[in-house]
Amino acid sequence: MSSILLGAAALGLIWSITTLGVFMTYRVLDIADLTVEGSIVFGAVTAAVAIQAGIHPVWATLLAFLAGMTAGLGTAFLHIAMKIPSLLAGILSMIALYSINIRVMGGSSNVSLLRLSTVFSGLTEKMPKNTAVILVGGLVVILVVGLLYWFLGTEIGSALRATGFNAQMARAQGINTRLMTLMGYVLANGLVGLSGGLLSQYMGFADVQMGTGSIVIALASLIVGEVIFARKGGLLLSLFSMVLGSVVYRFIIAMVFEAGMPASDLKLFTAITVALALWLPHVKTKWSGRRKNNATTEGRCESVE
Amino acid sequence: MRKVILAILILSLVLAGVACSKNDKPVIGIVQIAEHVALDQSYEGFCKALEDNQMLDKVELDFHNAQGDMNNLSTIADRFVSKKVDMILAIATDSAQAVAGKTKDIPILGTAITSYTVAGLVDSDEAPGGNVTGTSDMNPVSAQVALIQDLVPTVGVIGLIYNSGEDNSVLQIRMAKEAIEALGLTWQEVTVTNTNDVTQAVQSIVTKCDALYIPTDNTLAAAMAQVYSVTLESKTPTVCGADTMVYDGGLATMGISYYDLGYQTGLMALKVLAGESTATMPIEYASSSDLVTINGQVAEEIGFVVPENYVDSVIYPEA
Image (cartoon, rainbow over all chains, first blue to last red):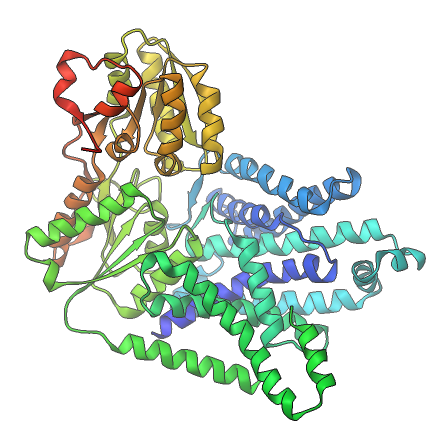
């Protein structure tokens, strides 16, 4: 019982780094970047192969981050230098990475980490695996959120946000928007790669198919986080709402499994539960809105997407 | 913030309520990566073995399908560990890796897994040495290639089609290429990444080969209808890795039946439930692997004349 909640929390924390990456492109830069489906696997595969080659898991995890960054660089090149629309650039990177991932794994599609030590190994000797993953994952997430918060507050970070808000205006202010977009791509996919690197170590294997549907999961987590947690408030709250959204999304799936639905109805019930979770706050606003004035209701409705 | 705490509380209560409804029967947790005929049949065969030994009523089966999403495997594995199930049946490689990563104590039986050692699940096939053992679906690739030459003596080029993203398929294709070259024939290959690519891939390969060979590939197993419709036009004989693929439109196979393999796994499960240790139970291979199956309907449609000595192997799936 507690193990399934802990497992959901552990998986959610690891996934939240992907959600933060998607937040960077989708919310900050206002670009729908589909590279994610490939870069998460690229990170996972890089970390797994590195660990198999005898590299220390911590370095392997950092390599996953670098791998994700190169994937982002690839997409940025397609989009910025070759002028390919962002959606297609992401798709191209994603399919290219499929082949690259298999190549990195030396022609096979699955690398096992079951008998090797991972970043979680030191702690798993002292406590249950999920607790260890929550501790390590939590630490990494706090670090990532802290650094992102700091970075987005610097002059470069502000320029990056300005680029996403209004590129024309940003250019008028003398901001190099192409460089900012490139930086956003690289940083976002670096985070996604890092998330993949932790994911393969948590699951005990990396598989070329493990990224399937990841953009959908990340977007769902992002929106769940925004709708439930960050209706008002600043950047820090937005970042943490991504983390909470990812964890809640995993809780929802765990709940659907626990409810004992027929196996093939899983996706339908996941969709219904997520839809309900998104709808509930809206209903609540409507009820309380009747008692308050109308302006507040409208304002709040707009923040629900 | 109050809303968040409330939501988590409600969630916990719901989960607690479900978790309390446990009874005294031994529980077998079953996890399957995705839905397709071969994997479904493994499960059915497993259940049949329990039923034949009057065990089906004496155990509780907790069946879950990850719907192709590997993150779900992790959540399902957590569920089994938290429920403290007595045994786990993992159908397909990723399922087994996911549960093996979560528990070193609960006995795990695998099926529809080609190589346990490559997947990092066991020390060796003979002495697994841990909590994982099971049945392998390694099919007799070289015998299947020989069957192509037996059925189509004039064959020169054999076409190979598979998903390069499936470890098991890559391994089998490597074996198939060796077998083809050993027979003095040549091969042409084409790969797919998902079921959307299959029609085009088959269309391109049939123009370059005299016969087609498909390994036990999950993607192609799910897309046999597409293979069938293209090979029907080109009149290309198709030899597949598994009999389920022949039922779905392939011409012939010599190989394992996933139902029988599941059944065999079920018999292993009985031993585990009786207390035998998985560490010393060797990986088992299909016991009925010289089984030839020819789809009579497909043979007629592509104008293939079944050789005299294979007439007994002809089946008509529709009838």
